[in-house]
View 1 (tube, rainbow, N blue to C red):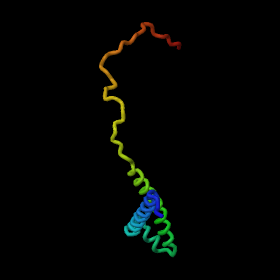
View 2 (cartoon, one colour):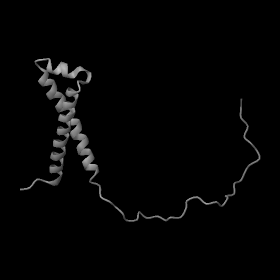
View 3 (tube, one colour):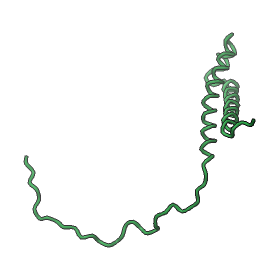
View 4 (cartoon, rainbow, N blue to C red):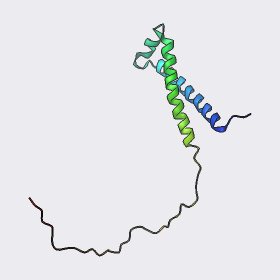
Length: 107
């Protein structure tokens, strides 16, 4: 039994998203952004902070990755959409009736 294409697409993009998250968290730690390396590696529970940051960013990156993949699945529709190519506006002036009496405004 094979897996449906959409499930394979989802799993592949989730793995890509969590891979990007691992690279992102590694870069945060390597460049010591906001002193995170010192905080995480200097604590006995630093591994938990790294795991939580990887997981939370993985959810975000996986969602974005899957969204991009789904939007890229659109089908091209090159058929004419109907309507005419005639311009909507014309340069023929339209007659307008103007009244000479203006309404009075009470003050």
